[in-house]
Structures are given as structure tokens and as C-alpha cells.
Length: 130
Image (cartoon, rainbow, N blue to C red; front, side, top):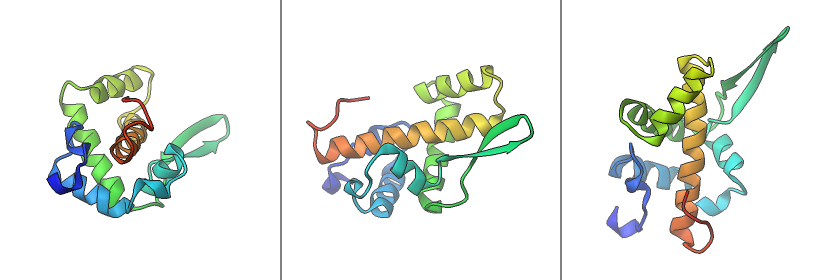
């Protein structure tokens, strides 16, 4: 990973293998016009599912399953350790969301963090650290 000059491995829950998977599956962060487009490509963009008065969001079954899997591993790792991801997950649970719903929210948030990290790696002056 030293040859790629990526800082993805500095994120909690991403080792060399996951960083390599993310970099190869995205084929360059410049392909995506926004964080939302990247999240959609990863399959972590929420889909609204409603029935009567109940409105919920579910994970998309579309998108790159390998990237979704990488974000899932990252999310589970962050939930198990004292990280900002764990605090975010616990906050969502305190709001009344179930485990899967809170995990979906965390994966979406982590997709944003990964996207911003890849942008910063490409052009350090482009975006401020998160």
C-alpha cells in the first residue's frame, strides 16, 4: 500500500487488504460527482420504504457488493471499538433505531469519510480534513 500513497489505512477498521479493495473497485475517486454518488455506487445509499404511516429507509441491494462488504467490515470494527463511529452508532440507537438501521446509517457516514479521504489523497488542497 506504500506505493499507492493512500491514507485510507489510517481510518479505523481499514487495513491494507480493505484499502486495496476500495482503491481497485472504485478505479479513481474522480469518477464520482459527489459523496452521494459514491454512496450509491457502494450500495449504502438509503432507499425509502413506506407502508401506511411508517416510513423507513433500507439498504440498496444495488451497487458494488465488494465495496459494500468493505464498508460493512469497517462499520462492525468501529462499533466494537471506542471510535467516533461507535459514538455515532450509539447515538442512532438512542434515537430509537434498531441495530440494522443504525448500522445502515453508520455505513453511509463511513462512505462519506472514505470518499473525502480519497479526495484528499488525490489533491490535499481540495478538501479540509473531516
